[in-house]
Length: 162
Image (tube, rainbow, N blue to C red):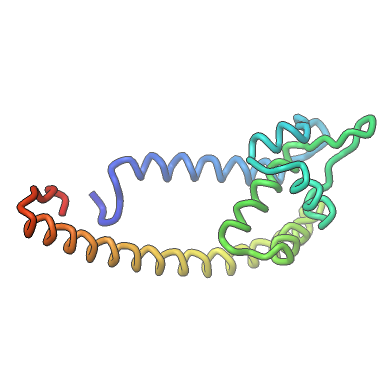
């Protein structure tokens, strides 16, 4: 087993990678014959409120179509929402997210610029997360030693993984 990895983590990582690839493929897809989603479907799928969707629309991050006055979202909009939420989760500001999404354009213009931006941003976030993981691993090791010592002092069994 690789240090810091649990037995199921390879499967989890593979599933996460496959899901991320699908989101990106959907983001770059052609919207013309795309599956459509209503506000409720998107809210339920991403655990957001209709107000959140309107906020992102007002900020120019999402641009749903209107059919008979009802907002409907394409597979591309759904992928953009996934990217927005993921970028927010890693600490990107809405301005950074908009900059990234605007680089793409409708016909793929700006693709190299977008990729360079993504490369720079992901390099930075990967380094930050690796550093956090190292701190977490150190903290866990210290806590396991403390836990084992306390168990021994109390005459309690010490788990084998300690």
